[in-house]
Image (cartoon, rainbow over all chains, first blue to last red; front, side, top):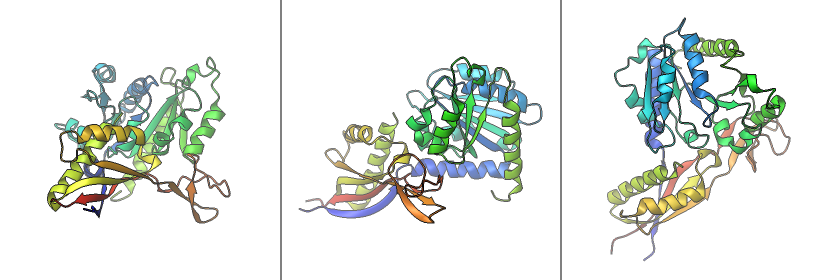
Length: 225
Length: 115
């Protein structure tokens, strides 16, 4: 017997997208600006975030969710910033999903926050598929990683909104070629904003934070954004 | 490696359709874009695993590759990309405007009526 073909047209990640959409609406209603961070392991996400939380906390209400496969080390490090931090242990899962963010937020009043940061699991592949309801997806790449990384992982760079180049204090030691990396980023995501920072020396942190604060201010000015 | 959880979602969705329609699923047609963040080969082997001990055991996953389509603001044309460099293949103008290529969609099911 011949099979019959039935069109169904269903997005496989429909459930995640629905949860993410609900989260985004909730974040916008509450006036909290949400930033997610993706990168490979060891690119300095946690140090960058710790510094960001510490500096932003002076003027804004900030909190962070941090994904990790097995440990709570990152949450403990981030807690040094004195900001509220919650760990999401993903077990064998290599990325965060919207429902995990939703669960982690239980007991938190997001309306009490100006900025919420979501640190994804260190991975440049899997997180690209999952919308978390964030306003800004930030991809981090350190100067020690090699300038061709955007070409090797075009999807994560293309689906991100801005790039932070971290550990710029090591740039000279590793003969980092800024122009090459910038060109590669622009090849896979034309027009992307790129900011160089060193969380260690503080270089570039002002530019990053000013830009971030302006994004939130502009977003808040648009009704029903 | 998130292909297994994606394969499990595909199987789950197909099982629901299969139940609703009272027919066995022989094959699933999936549309996959290069920007979906899913590796086809990994998905295909994960699919077999995900089908085990379900009503879809023995079914086939047929993956249709969807090309990346961008809009070139210079030519004012839709262009198909053959690489991950986001520029117009005709005039080389960079373009971030992706019209297609993020698809991860069950497009159709091949249903076999119960005997």
